Image (cartoon, rainbow, N blue to C red; front, side, top):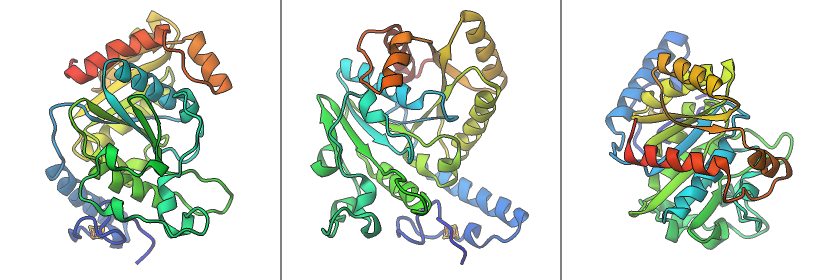
Length: 307
Ligand code: SF4
């Protein structure tokens, strides 16, 4: 069998039984199309349909401001009394902890795999085998925290020739599906740029996808693709957040384009010098900014299911 990471984790991780879709054995494009259709039908039929947004994947083209939006969303949610678990699944960008005002590094989840373990200690991954994982039960060595905030990092590619990020994606997908949240707990996932994570099914555990859209053709085109991908794995709450908006004219144009692509908009965040400054020097986002107030409205819209 060629190297292939089954979106159900059926081969390497025994997460779900093999459904015999044929995706891993497909040799031609028609075979692949047919097999992936079977896989999508299975995933849609088994999707956990929830009426509320509690596991939120923040997606979009590279550079649209996903990490910044994750930090802004986390800040607003904490202010509103939610306990927020942030999962950094981005394999490259290191800035999210700083935007959240967190500095002490924690062990990445990937260090549970022997190949990536830290030091000589054999990693104890037994807790990961539980059917459900509450934020409280995640061992402290993997968490950086602040009041009503926990940050867990899946892993980063640190060196050339270290290998591909497949194992990180597999680990993230399996972990995210098991996270069990109580009332007033929300999980925010800062996703890798683009759509590769959808190919690996990382977003399967999410109930909501927020697509960050900046004023550019590529960002709009990718937003449409992300909507298609998210719908394909059974996610029904999909909203765009417009980011780095310079004027009401641009906002109106973006809204019109997204309407054509059948993507609902949760709100817009305008260019904000305080946010740009924090992003530039890698420091905690200030609590009171225009962007913070705009994100408050977005949080209300997303959590209430408003359109
Ligand atoms: S046949 Fe389908 S479900 Fe089975 S291992 Fe291959 S990709 Fe996964």
